[in-house]
Image (cartoon, rainbow, N blue to C red; front, side, top):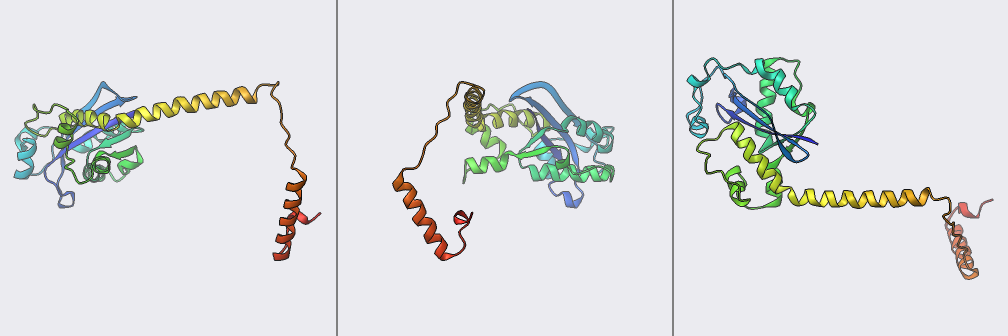
Amino acid sequence: MRQIILDTETTGIQVNQGHRIIEIGCVELLNRKVTNNHYHCYINPEREIDAGAQAIHGITKEFLTGKPLFKEVAHELIEFIQGSELIIHNAPFDVGFMNAELQYASKTWKPVAEYCRILDTLALARKQHPGMRNNLDALCKRYGIDNTHREYHGALLDAYLLAQVYLAMTEGQASLLEELDRSTQATVKQDALTINNPARQKISVEASAIERQAHEEYLQKMAKQGKCLWLED
């Protein structure tokens, strides 16, 4: 099972106001194990960065000068995430920006959801911890994940933190699924042994006279209410 933890940083929070992606970070999970395979890039948004956004991620327009445009990295990004389960915290935000960037790059690109499945860990956290703060910092604290080195938000750093949070959030679920899988396998094996055993016995159970009489009376009662197929020859 291949899963990709993804995070982005942007010039602002409103995609419908023309804000753009400036950083993408992806971390790969294979069978719930973090691998050394990751994807990370900075992107030139060709526009100013809101002061509020810059205060969060610390990325300046000057730093992004000379970095590639999104259309120049779109193919390698889709190639990296395609066919995986994409795990994102507040997925509508990041996916909305990615879909907009793909359309800016080329009308031939499809929405992200057509390249991979999407899981929103914010929705999952709200279900598991209703009424509590469920941003990434709060979840790190809740699950004992060290994020003290996180002075600014960064896409790749946040993706690594989210990977740990996701694994912690779903640890019990994974254990249950593994247990169910073992139980299912045992049942299937036992069924196969029974089906393939030529010495197995067939048991025939006949109804008693009282049971047959009760059945006949019930059929006659049905016939009085309408057509009864069981009484037809």
